[in-house]
Length: 265
Length: 72
Image (cartoon, rainbow over all chains, first blue to last red; front, side):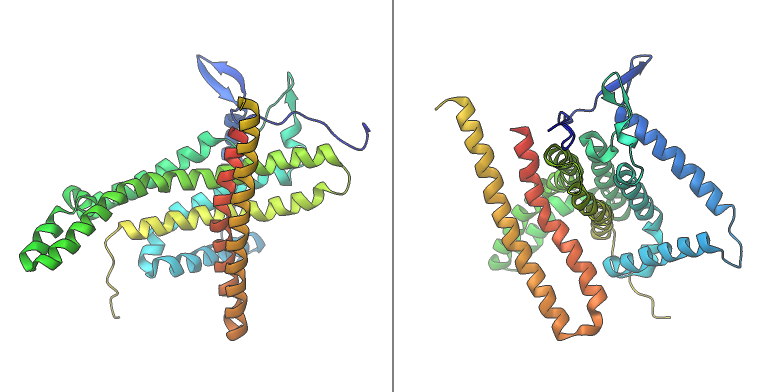
């Protein structure tokens, strides 16, 4: 049954190293990341340098995208000032992760270019290193912003609530017991921070990697009309995962900063 | 019990229990979203967006089990 099915071995979890430059390994994920970076740089430079007052089609699309992202962010942060401040971060995450997820599906045959039996390009988000790096960087950023807004001891005071225990016991014993419960909840928040990193990275990695593996399994079954269903599902899930990652980072950022008071104009 | 058979049983039980839980949760969520749309049809776009995001979050626990399946 060799013309109805395509048999390939399932890609491993670790990326394969293509070549070394002065002891620095270049894996297939790195090559595809460089390709995406070059494409995004060229596209954004060419797009922005052609902005005029009377908008062309490309500029209208960019403005639609901008309005969409800002309206989504407004629903999460609840304050237009904060959403304009974090728009560069969230927009960059959205475009980068969306393009990384979609690139292997939109350009046919990009991930099949092989060199020595190993594919040269590999979806970057199907590699746990990429998603782990993105998640750690985003959560570290929320911690740094929290330190900048609340001060170093204010930030630690969110997790180790000694001051609330002291204030609670001064009011009444009952308040003191509640404050001790709050102290233990604050300690659990430390575990929650690590859970945020693990859940962010594993969600994105699991969706993309499992999508690739399932695609290989379906090709092993029947290579003719059936894979199109799974490709359609992969397109949808690529966009949804990009949106979910970016919106979750926006939500964690909003929880970390001091709440901005609405100025009644 | 040998290692290979224990590993196969663990793989099967992880996947089925996780997928059952995720399917029940997602069905509940989508049912509530449809009910809310039926009550107030003019906020359909907003509710649909939030429902998609909710489904992605619920599906993530099933995806963790899928990753564990490949690691086992």
